[in-house]
Length: 163
Image 1 (tube, helix red, strand yellow):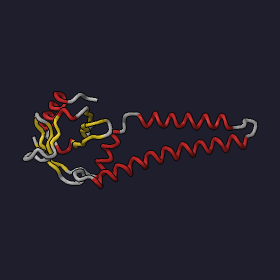
Image 2 (cartoon, rainbow, N blue to C red):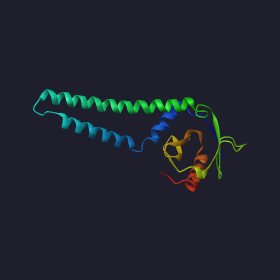
Image 3 (cartoon, rainbow, N blue to C red):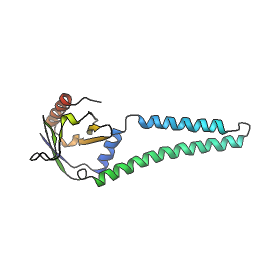
Image 4 (cartoon, rainbow, N blue to C red):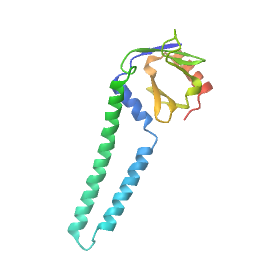
């Protein structure tokens, strides 16, 4: 089975967002909010209304800045990876078989056996195939026919555990 596609930068950003839907950011945000709250509670003289207001506003802006910074950093990193990649911005053809996935079916260069993938997940737009917890390959579903989707699902179910 051959799948030919070109991944746009916007599609890659959507795939990165799918990758980050694990809840790690939510946990980090909760820890940051807890620390900011503890600092405000410990460092505030509750008899002084002005100090309470100042510390609550400082904590609010600190948490807001953290959320904005994390989001902007993620988008910047994804754009940087996309632009520096040797394969992402260009049209590629994947040859998918029982042996694995090849970028070029006429050579062994760029071949990834099924055993190299640790897990996979998908949504209505993409398949993400993980080679480790932070590295994944993106295959857009729009590039596949219904028959290819069924065949690809069969390969995934047979060779890779699902997340």
